[in-house]
Length: 452
Image (cartoon, rainbow, N blue to C red; front, side, top):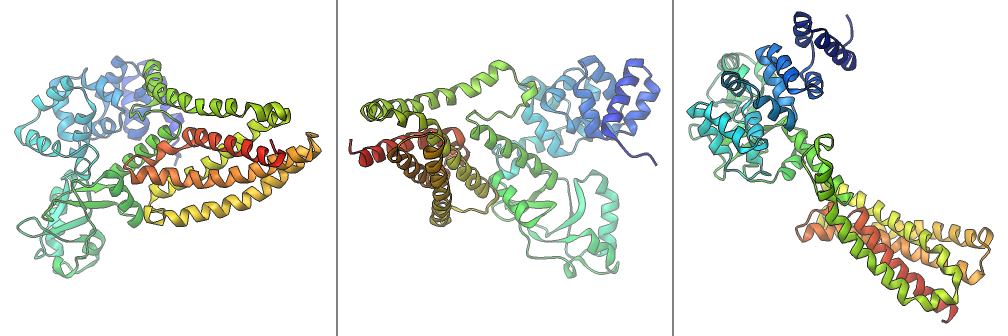
């Protein structure tokens, strides 16, 4: 049996399309993973993309459409006929329909709704009432629901009947006549139990669930903590209204991580892919932070100007400023990155702030002592400066490292306490703040040691 190679398969599809060998292309598409078909289609023009899509089998077409990026979906939806659009909507999982509606411009949304039946429009309107970043906006209503009096045989019969239209069949949710969530039972337990055993004798009653208006980040933390493949969503009266599957929450985790990295890099988060974002939009996202950081950095110039007398008295102090500011910025960035990551995974809580600060203080002392000693030796042996200047640099390194570690831990936690995203307190801003504090310490220590 030949192993599946995505690069070779995509190359094969390209060759067949160039040769216009439609029968062979259709057969190759049938054997290709939807993820790889999406990658293949993303490089095609509108006409070629439409040809490829129309060659897909009905079930494969829905899977490929769900994998398409926002731009790919938009190009396809504006090219296909109304009957083809109707077929896509009917074949898609409901949560994928909602995702598509949220991504598309108003003209495309109106066309999708116009080609949907009244039941679909009703469900869509119910879902769109939930905030964009809530659990409700992520969930799907396509799950297997059973009542506690059903037998294993009845559950299996239901799964056979409706399973093909459900998001997952591996967990069945137990509800009563008012839709209240009573528990859940796994397909494995159903299959391995006696067929006349009732659900109420097998179900787990301690169900971990989330509320529809709960923030997506909190939902992601619940998935990470318990390793679920699906999580039930309930309303304020604990009635089951949907489920969130792990594939949907993984998309959110990736998006949140991307946004955090964008903020940490000093740019405004953007949901669009980098490759499909224009240079003008990228510049627009980056300019506000760069302007803010430029203004913030002017404090460094002010400190240098106010310490001009010290610099003129000891010219050698000037040559060590880059080393000191870089060391402080790097130390602060290390702490802030680890604390931000810890808060994102739930490992670090706001209530533990004093523990985090004390730990970073300890790290700062250990690292500071070593770096201070190395800096002192460097100044004496390699730079040939006076003992007093070497001492000033060594002591300043020690102080800056400790301050940077503590500030790098405190700022992200302070941002979260005030309701801001901790990621904004990352490398660029930390470096600017620590630079200013470090220079103040440097020149004050110089004044004390040199008696200026």
